[in-house]
Length: 490
Image 1 (cartoon, rainbow, N blue to C red):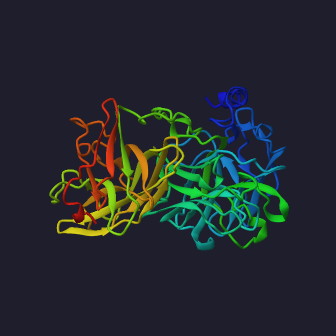
Image 2: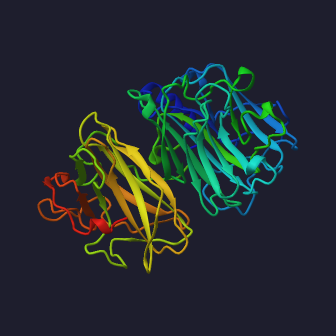
Image 3: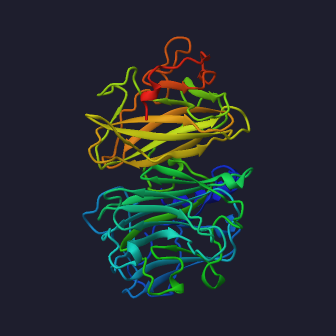
């Protein structure tokens, strides 16, 4: 499989347009390199089983050089024993001199990458999740961050044991990002596969997205305003160079005491053109993910049904239109509520598209938490904007201590009315690495002729009596009916 990756990249150049899944332009697994410690400035030459195709991306020539600041030098060799998780296999780039030291690899190119979709992947581990004496515990995995350079820069990093960032700093400190927090997010001796996807919106660059995955599980999305960006990545960094770093901070030369190096190792890294999905990720080799139905403009995302909510009225105080897991009347324990564990991190994924072409209406996602005595608090709100094609949206929540159940709600979030179609909703306990039993998340059990809501869900349209829920698919139908008890939902 490894030797075929180069040919796959070449074939993709011929057969796949850049607007779709594009070629992998850089892929390193270090397997054919000589074992040993490398010095600052030594050049790394990709082997025949690796990929370096800068010409495919229009970025000119590409050079890889080793970085070493206050350490004994990066090392290529066998992977340490006793680590858990899935990795690419073969040799590893070891950057384990410890905190307060920086070891890794630097990629330098001639030109910035024109604005387009791209995907960054890394399989990595740390032996010191705290980050030790690094600047605020940061360990840099990969990226081209240089906050004083031109937009845009994308990078992935740890911030201590309890935070991981899929971040962009475009030179204006906007800080659009997906930030995942938990206890811990980054454990010692675990191989992680982290992915940052830049989904560039050609027709509305201000509504582009950063999409984050860990081990093929969606961690969240963030709107990214790419309207002022001059390139996708490889913007100018320190001294005007166009660089991208692996295991070290990209602006290391601007402050050699600003330590942000990875104490651990990189098994493989990849940069591909196109906004890849988990079924298309380059890493890790042999990681088989069932292919999803292609995202396209279709009536439903997958299966037979989808739910379309339309907020007809212009918004005024007291109006509330949405879909949640509440039973009627409310009671605990709830058959449709989700069992959760206080202190754990949970994630959600939902597919959505515009209900009316070209409107780009917004919706809000929120969780409400309960213990045996009732409601104890809400999550933060995620607000998303639908587009004309099916898109995956998601985020993460930290469950408060003592919570044993959670409600999950999707609300319309438009001031002048709007319409959004939803399908294929799922939730995962990230801490326990197991799915939550969110029944009927695809709305496939929707008996009768457009009953009030699909089974295990409740439609509410408080003070908005003309707003509707509509079943799309093989037996469509519309209702303005509402389950009572909406006022009990917080």
